[in-house]
Length: 461
Image (tube, rainbow, N blue to C red; front, side, top):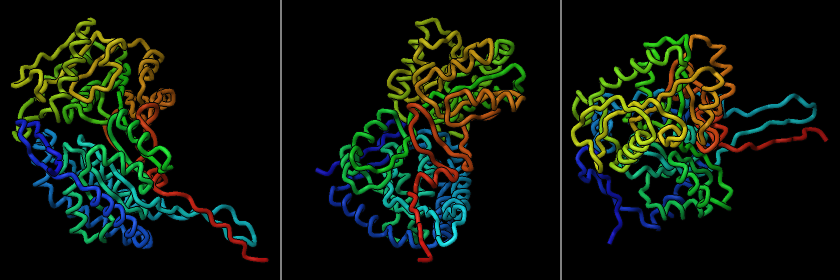
């Protein structure tokens, strides 16, 4: 009997899509096609590669009216937000435009009688394991620069967003990309681990859990492939006394609850200076109560269900534990189907929290946030660093120098001031501690998808 992957919709629990798992023979054939196509693709001029990638982008954008409701059915994001086309377009166009400069050879100081330079060679076959929470954006982060750098790509998308991989494949087909340069395959966990350990993959990019990252490192052990891992996060915000309060409240509420809190760099904990604490909390609670939780296909809905019921149940457990330990809950929103075993969940704001509570220490990845009062920068920095993760941290102040000085002391991959939950393609997207290794976007993203090759040519004898 053929094994299949079933996509259960969070909207109503129905099976929205089902696809057969690739046979081992099909997996091997896909890898062979990727390997065979890679040399020719690497010889294709960068400008020509860029034309294919921009044609792919146009094909993908043309599907957006179909993609938006499809995303709602797959992972629950409300259709009113229009999908991910804005970010997909920004990142794709930026990385395509950057490629010539980022991939240009480096020439050191002149040495008479020698020709010396360093080229950036493609790694070969890149395996992208993409997540469901931002299924287009996270995949584009790896796929576009990998292809622009001359690699071929095999994509395994998350089971929760199976159809996204098919959309990528269709867009690349419409763009006329040479056969074997990009392939989408459906794999189970055992096949994924086998492929990682086969020695036939040169680089893997994975976005997901810390446990998933450890499993990938273990599976790839001994192959010497390179890895890019974006894993867990518990991103903090620090609100200073001179903050533009209305702006901070609006943006931090959005940063905490957009996409039902299922954002890699979403705000999960907020530290507020005691001078503005009461006013900030009052505004934050009022803004949160404006959310409308419901069917994501309804234009009135501003927060859909979480992607799976077990994710919502984890948030319920975090909230219950915090309340047992003395936290105060402030929203109390009544939502249809908000019960154990359901993906529908109201947003929650907690105060009187501390770092003995899971909600302030362990990744929530859902619509819950804790707010703590702090006396000064020293206390805020210590609390922000009291985490096993480090993806982003945001600082809310009118003083840029103070924000930069605080940022210097925060253990994180990105420091924001007066914004959050955004990936700037001109800056590397990376993390520290258990958030992972490697980096996407910017010139650094290209460095992680190429290998240096030195040329030391003696011209005279």
